[in-house]
Length: 281
Image 1 (cartoon, rainbow, N blue to C red):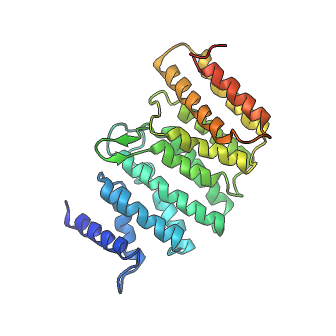
Image 2: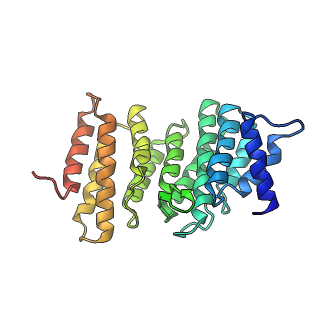
Image 3: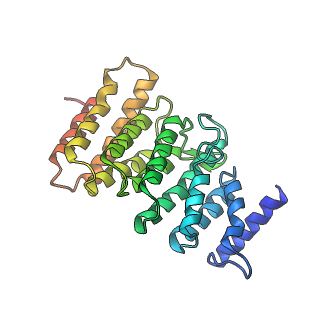
C-alpha cells in the first residue's frame, strides 16, 4: 500500500469520525485530486466506504462545492480516465473506476435539479455521455467476491433517474433512455442477479410517476421488449428474455397499487406472458 493511499485512508477515516468536518486549515479542494485518483480503488473500504460517502456528504448534504467546481468535476468524471476508463473491458478491476465515477455524477445532477446551474447544452452532452456509457459498458457484474460492488447497470441507472427529471431533457432524450434500458436488458452477456432490475425500474417508474411521457408510449416500449422472443434460440436470446421478464415483474409490483394505469398494466402482463416460457395460457 502506497504511503499516499494510506495517508488518504487515514485522513478520510478521521474526517468521517469527525462527522465530515475538516480540520483547521484544510479545504475540500485539497482532497479532490486524490478522491478522483482513487475513486475506483480495488478495495471497497476506500472506494465504497470512504470516498463515495465523502462525495455524498460534500455534494448533497453540505453543498461544499461551488457551481464552477461541480462543472469542472463533471468534466473529469465523464472523461476517458473515469467513466470511460478502459471501457469495453470485462472481468478486470477497471470496472470500479467507471461505476464509481457514475455515482457522484448522479449527485451533481440532483444538485442541479434543486438549483439549476448547468445549461441546455451541458445536460445534452451529459445525456449523450451516459447513453454512450450504457452502450459501451460490457462488464455488467453485480457483486464481486474480490472487490465488492461493481454494479455498472445500477450506478448508470441512478444517473438516468436524475437526468430524466431535468427540465432540459427533451422527449426525444427520454425515448433514447428507454432504448438504452432495452439495450441493457438485451445485453447478450449477463443475466442480472443483484437487483439491477430494480434500479433500472427506478428510471421508468420515475417517468410514469412524474408523467414525463404519455403512458401509451411507455406501454408501446414495454410491448417491444418481447421482440426478443422472435429471435432464434441462443444464449443471447435467453439473457434478453429473462432480464426483460424480471424487469417487468419488478415494474408491475412497483406500480400494482395504481388504478389509473390500465394500458401500462395490460402491456406489462401481456409482455411478461410472452417472455415467460413457463406460462400456461
